[in-house]
Length: 320
Length: 320
Image 1 (cartoon, rainbow over the protein chains, first blue to last red):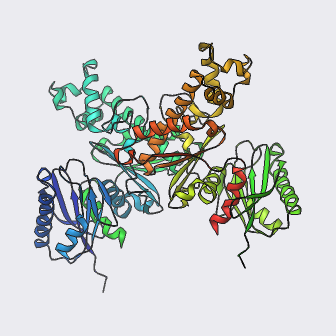
Image 2 (cartoon, chains in turn blue, red; image 1 turned 90 degrees about the horizontal axis):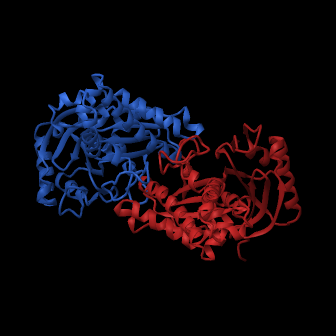
Image 3 (spheres, each protein chain N blue to C red; image 1 turned 135 degrees about the vertical axis):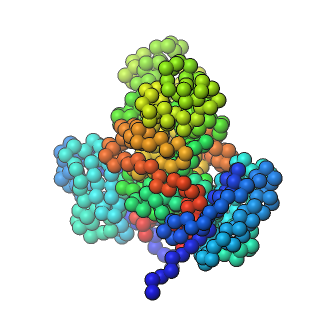
């Protein structure tokens, strides 16, 4: 008899919603749902929502659940299962999320920072299967990262490693939300990107972007820039190329420091496709030290939809 | 009876000379000597010089030698003991230095990249005894580095990790020897520093530096800048402060990426003393992410003279 496939619950905790799914060891989602995270109402409310969501999905499936993985924002102690000061969760200092969920469901629970969970998701289910070492970069509102070295996540001294978004590319560059200047996030994070293009766009009256946003700058988004770029708009194409250049500058520093040459790019903006990846690769290859030059690889993440749920559930398989 | 102290031979291979010493497990040098490295004459000549030096020092001491450590420039495979393409060693492709020396002396030989050996030296004999994790930065002609995480050197995919000198602080900054732009080495490496100051100095006719160099710009060196700074020359002090600022920018990126907060600064320029370290710490603390802010520590290396010999011999104790 074939060995039965193992199933896990993956919980992707975000500021707006908690996404929950039942995921097989092959990385397939059999059930999923989403509940509000109620982050504004404090940690107790959030924990109740997570429990509610898990109870709901358990009712929908007869699969035996092998363990629960949770990807959470903020500083996570993997050993203790605590989540500290997640951004956009007011009133939340340090909560032992792991223990609380473990007690409620009597299952082993694995908690990890969401960027690290994304990297582990790629390692277990995605592009990372091919590589022992790679850097996961998630592009979205922020720029996050996870470092995989010899099939293990690199966590640093206190579990906060991988903050690629706050690698400086220009010490006198634009101010970043973190307080520093010229972080890569301040160039390619969604808000920064959109607000830069809002300022530039009036100088490009012929750009197709104007049509796509109905002449209303408030409608500008990375998605619109991508659409314009794919339709051949030269200005939009130059934006994408420049994003790749900025990212390539940061990733060259990372490669030189860590001697890792494979980058996997996920998150919303990674939908930009080939021109973005080509530009990242071109710049990074030009800027790294000679021995790394031919080894640089830049791939889109394989987990796209539900990457958060899959990454969280991968924690169970990564650990076991 | 007290356990007898163990002794090792440390070999510091440089482009000009091979420095060799007998070093106790407490990090004390009992004998040392230096032979020409004859790097221009190709690998065979260099290897003969190393052997010659080791035979010579063995003759001078009756201590039982526990093992031999070699710190070498270039890419080193620690497992295989090979040294690949060391800069300033023409005709040297890939040489199995470890095996050759092991065979000759019938002792266990440990070969490591010189920057990593410096980090291991601090870990075993120096400042690093107090810290499980730290980044070693060596300032000299180049800017090198070694990453110690939980008392282990971090080597990356192919043993080339720790190239802090080629972390970019400004993507449009001065061209670096490596081919990229704005690497921290292109700001604070000896040659770059001196050539920048040569250009600036004419704008500072009152600087004490002029007196110290006898009005001859060719005499300018980091040592002179240090002397002028210590004697209170405002322009020289501003140079040191700015060096610290540049380094702080690079180290903030490194801290954010690796979640490591302790930096140990060695190499020639580290003789600059407190004003340099204060400036590095000030900048790095301002630029790192909030959770790291209060944790940043910047120390001068403890191993100063003969740091190369001691770092090489530390390889034996690190391994065993």
